Length: 135
Image 1 (spheres, helix red, strand yellow):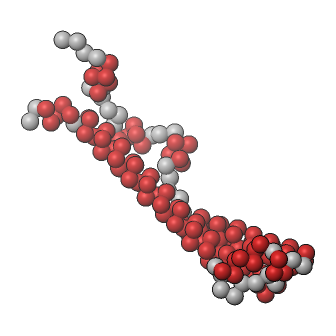
Image 2: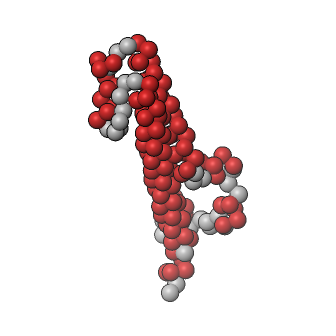
Image 3: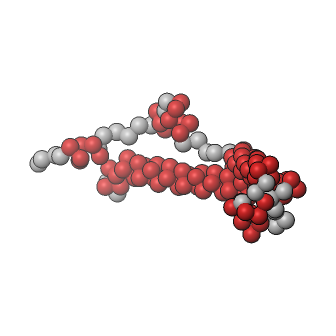
């Protein structure tokens, strides 16, 4: 009987849970979940400050209604290219950015958890293949 490399690799002993838990630190950090609130706050502050600063630059330039950022009033209630509009844009930018950052972190954590579950399940099934053959 000829045994291929693939068959011998499948019959190789699987590492124990303790051995798997001893992964290098950088590998463990790669799969660590993102903190949803922290990413939401960081994204919100960045977007809010960006809108605030761009609006103030446009006010100083005197662009007014000719500026392309006037289109933000279609999305943000009360926004205009003015000093008051800059503060309204800051508020809406923080709110919108928080939701975007939170959702990105949530989605990434969900995909990573599902992937790890799938990989562990497949590994355990391969490790238990010999046991199931004897039943």
